[in-house]
Length: 124
Image 1 (cartoon, one colour):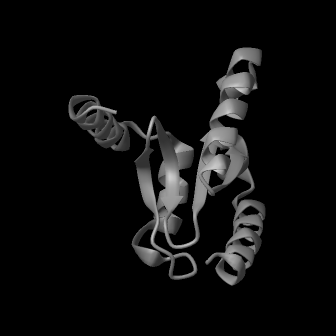
Image 2: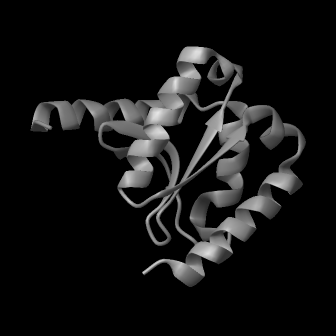
């Protein structure tokens, strides 16, 4: 990808940090500053050609938060292709619904803890 496009993607990712959803903001308060399992997470991180919601380089984890629009047929297809692309690069992708993050955070964190423990033990 050319440098100009890369710069535009990075700028767009940066701008997205200022218009985060309530669910993204809530999860970020838990993930930021190595508060969760002492892992460094980034938000709105560019993995070309995509911008992922949360990313942990140390264990190769991508976390995506989905709103209701992700339940539509074309969005399901897009998300499936996006996940396949990221997994082909060696990343593990987990997806959570915004309403679960907002209403069932304990369940989300328990699942995320299990995923991270598994990856910390197996990631090269």
